[in-house]
Length: 210
Image (cartoon, rainbow, N blue to C red; front, side):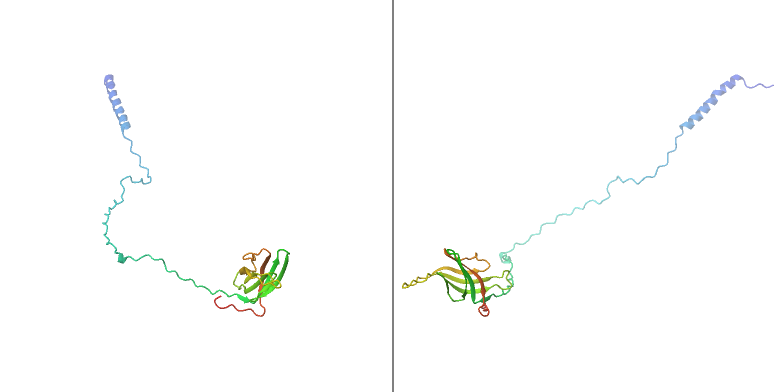
């Protein structure tokens, strides 16, 4: 009968086996882990230098010499020509031969409305009215008015057997029926204003140029 290996040799072989197993396990643990696959992501902006072209340096041109301007070449500054505006021919006022006037005695409060024909003196107490012209406004005017040019003289009635006193003018100019206070008669005792202009027959046409 054969005998197995002695116990002493079997004991010596165990450490070797253990060393191989330990080395194999250590080699498995020390093997590096393969890197993980990269996760696709958005393209990162380039951090490199800008790709724009460098600025081009343009040289400054040299100034151009301008010859001096002589006085003969310089024209004087003048204002623009004024174009005359067309002037329309104003409508003529119709003239009348009778003025209607109202007079007031401020002492007695007596008033009287009377007619004065153009060119004919009319007396009211100590006043003498002489109408030179009497007009009515034209249809183109904004206000329908009557205008009379007259003179008013202060001349008391002559006393029997005594010479007449010289007249003294107290008013001369235009009277306006719509504005009695515009050019009034200034007298300490009497007042008078224009009422209207009327025609005794037909209106008298205004002369040219009026």
